[in-house]
Length: 413
Image 1 (cartoon, one colour):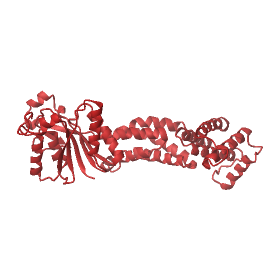
Image 2: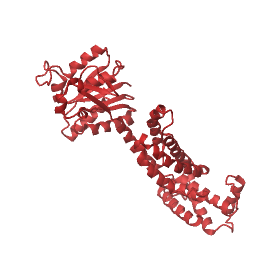
Image 3: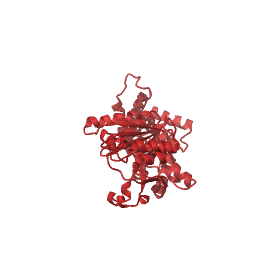
Image 4: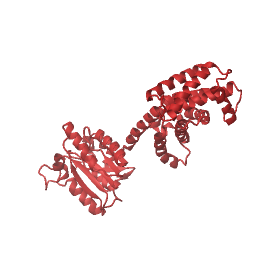
């Protein structure tokens, strides 16, 4: 594990300027962005840390080497000599390495560049990725490499940075400026990686009902804001993230008594979240989809809520949970509508309701008893992990759960 700057060197005759990050300006002017990165980000780094500069043969001859070593060099002093001088002046132990890459003029060469970059990243590295001179396809390739290595090697992306000389003006105008006016901002583009994570997290929640990833993302995104404002801002966003994660857990573990209250609070907090969304912009597109999903569940009554959650389970692949919840909703129906009882947790009352269903009691409508018997067959089969002679296929369970839910809505609501 080490700190690494990964950067690309181009072939352009770069303009001498100063670089600035978070209002901190380089002390000396720089011709290359890598000089600014060394001063602004690597001052506290040690011998195990490194700046790795990827370059083509042309970039090496034009900008890495000076005229003393290369007849094609753009400058008397190339990046190589400037960085070594900076290391000496700043008394830094950080290593500086160059890695040659092909021009990328074919798909095979692009894949080769991908492999070369990946090989330079080790487990748990902390990466500052500079894309200032990442020409053509390289910014996209960079994002792919970052996501790939984060998953494969538990890499932490500290920063994705871009030296935006065009933020000053056109190149011709910048050339005419006095050098002390050429202060180029370094943009932090790390949020684009965060946005990529949000897209994955949102998709995971909408497809599977699992909110763990967006909860964790939200906590990371909110932490700086909550510290800065001492927790006064974004409280409702944080609360909603926790509620979504809680609902994921109680639905996957069939905690039916908690469904109604949790859904009510989710729907209640969503409007208040809208006032805070400017603090967490990637979260905004999720709001309406979350509201629509939970608005489909009728929390006015216990039975309607349970059937709504059973539908949620079907939609998100919780087939076993859906069958279990649906079974218990029939027991609750008998307790409420046949026994005229209110305590749905009383074991004696529940046992009585189940006995009435199993004994084909005359007070219970035939459609309810028929649905109960059919659900029991599939619920027992899935709970016994298929170790029965009359077992069913995975497709049967999903198809029958959908049918059972539709019938339950027709006869119980």
